[in-house]
Length: 485
Image 1 (cartoon, rainbow, N blue to C red):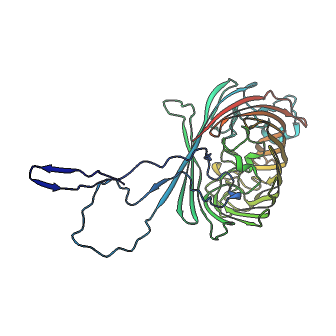
Image 2: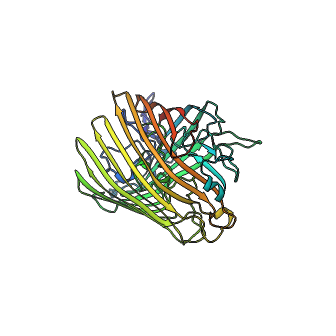
Image 3: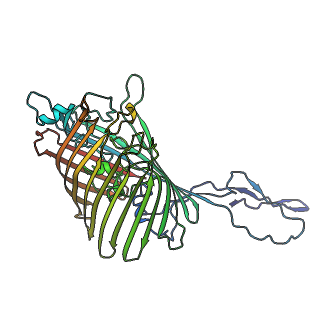
């Protein structure tokens, strides 16, 4: 509190001393620590929640006394007994975020699929069992860390939200503006909120901009060792490792892998993570959620459940910390099919993952498989029809190298072999639609670090097809400038 200075007033023959003290509360936020890097997402790796640092982060510290009302101190008429000091109640709130601005150039129409039309079908047997058959990967032409394709195409059937809708044209885009708030709710309780502003084109006098909440969770660490964390709310997945870098400021490159759609969603529920050991760790994570960890726009996501069956997921991993960091994990999930009105048929995923870091080189790999029957002996209400899935296998191998402190290189190879369908092919009328994916992708990228808060990244995605799927003109160049606050 700043104090007013004392003034002395004098008049001829009489000296009068008056002291007036005015108190002005300070409302200035504490200065930001120089050189500190603020993560745009406070939960970059929820499975690796580090012990709390002894140095507090830059926070908005609200004191009960900081109410903006001036105080006037008056000297007491007589001495009084000293009051017992009482610790003030304090609330800490830390805001961070990132802006992701990009430019992309797609090949062809920007869509990653084609329709298998006659008279010479690539898959004639499937064409007889389904009204529509589509070939390729709808997410293969991703232009940003959100995984949004350059164009969804004009497939027959239900209307879709084509958020980029480039029609094959090059263009600039503000991919995302993220705002993350982390609140200290107690000595061992932390709340995290992450919201994204997504500027997009409007139509028919309506704005296309969107607002989404991808995290709204509370974390409790009940032990003094801080090796056990209990979460509740809308939270990160425990399947695989790619969820740790799903945001633009966390990811070394730009685009997610072809299997990220199955593992980087943020479901609603509860989660427990426990770590045993120090340099050599065993980490066990388990979650109980409404639905799977599939990203919300894809076919197998259901944030608010429509059946009593819930999804259980878990991961067990071993970690070696030191000059060489190694991690090997197995994970999976099992629960009722998302969107279905009953819990009769399950949707499950299982996979293995690996990560190694040696100096400036990091290598990451993941393999995944999964199944879901979809509709079998009944047809559900239109908005609750579950899609079927036969994810035979999907995998990626990525290497990230910081050649210098300011220049990094990325290389990733991957593939996805899957069938996704709606309807029952054995019914008299056959199935509604079938997506056949046999795709591979090679991605090369560069990363330029201007500072801890300014990054420029660029990637070229070379997409290809195999196993009888015709070649599709669906390569993409994309770039991203990320500034962190």
